[in-house]
Amino acid sequence: METHLKVGVIGAGVFAGYHASKVAAHDRATLIGVFDRNEDKARDVVQRNGGYVFFEAETLASACDALIIAVPGSDHAMLAKLGLAEG
Image (tube, rainbow, N blue to C red; front, side, top):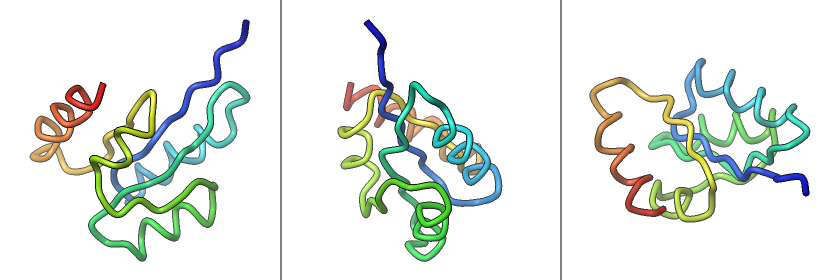
C-alpha cells in the first residue's frame, strides 16, 4: 500500500518556496498549504506550487502529516512544539 504524505510549509521565503516546490513535485506527497504572517508571500508560494493559504499555523499543522518549518531559527522551537502538539 502506497502512503501519500500530506505536507504543509510554514514560511514563504526563498527556502520555503524551494521546499514547497520539491513537495509539489513528489509523487508520494501532497502540498496541503502554506502559512506565513505575510499572506501575500504565502499566496505567491501557493500560486506557484498548489495547496491553500492558511491563516493560522495551528490550522495548517492539524491538516498535515508533516510540516516543513522554513522560518528564521528563532521561531523553530515554538513551531516545532506546535507541530508536535497537533500530532
